[in-house]
Length: 305
Length: 305
Image (tube, each protein chain N blue to C red):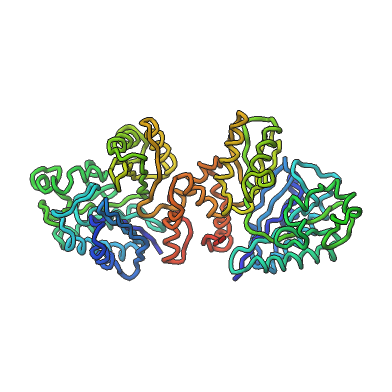
């Protein structure tokens, strides 16, 4: 059976009852909700669903509908950039399904959200219909407050589906993409400008590491470099963190701790381990459970207490 | 079904036909041979088998018999300490089986090797019958060449099973234990004394890291710190390597690369990744495949190309 992942981001991380209602809307047969991460500072919730492609598309549709009814973007605030209540809805191929199939499903889902829910939809990443809408920063160039004015006035802001007008639920970015790792580093300072300078230095758009997006934010009274690794096979977690460490050290600061938002693929952690341990990448083949999995079909981690 | 691991070490790493014959002797129904690692410098082969406890014990018995027939310790040389052709035979519980059951099976296996094959057997680790035979270094205190004389003369060297006399196959250490990681660090020098000094400093017996055994060896013209991590939950791979790096740096040297001998449990690599990435240990719960496994029963790694 094919398996895809959907990682919708909602602009609500403070009202648990709203998060619960949105998550409950996604309880569709054939869909497993494998993670819910809410952040009050970001005022944002990231949910991870896995399942076959059609039930996942149905669950995503219902979640967008619920979020649109429950989140009023005119009242919403938070440190994270966003354009709508159901801000981003990406589909990610996992097993026995291609990115092209996720693109096709993302476009059908976007069209349905536009016509049945009356929400403006921007297609992005592999599902983009326009070259200026490939990256999420391009699509979210105008935050909700600015997009309210530009969506009907600026032709480059005309949605791919739905009305050229923003209501209280804002707009939805629907896309298809490879795996993404949301990985944040907290610095030993409350000086936002340090995090911003580090972010500018390390991100691809500033001439830094390929497939790395980064923002400097102030979270919980600490300067945070908030990163998205859009292809960990090109720039992995340890390379990204080492770049942050170096850029922070050049400014007299260091990384105190890090966090994952949502989930990370096993191979991203194994890559980081091999690199940190100075092992060759071929050592990934020396994992006990992988060998047992090849021999017996059972890959589950051995629970050494 | 219960699952145990057996990691027999044989004193032959140079003659492929001998290794093949020993491995073939272990092809018993219900046993999967998941790794064979031969090293010419160590003149040693480490095989990893998994399966239910009784077929594993049968495969181990047949391997000891084959190794005893094919390896003549009077002709054998190599940088690794050893007492016999089938040098060490440990049983490790993996799933739905206790260490106590592995102890009981190791003792029965040892008795059978002693009586049916006429080889001296020392029980070690959790299977030890004497407090001075708990660790492998205690059991291998005398290498083959010395044990030839001491085994019949020194009462502390009397085998637990089998004759008090060494033939061409030497003796066998049979034990039960938890998971062990064989992890070697190559230094940027051919000076054996540096590796020996580093090994002495970092190992438990020298007041270093708990559950770490270490030897300095000269392998492939490079000084190698050869480590056994006997409980990676106490001292993990990254902590051990960091200690080697520090001890080497204090002597003006550095670690050029590392290698695994045999296999390592997934959680040892995940632990190393989390530590290197400054993530909290709770982030082990944020692995995509683990969550999918909990939801669907299928833990296999997602093959993101």
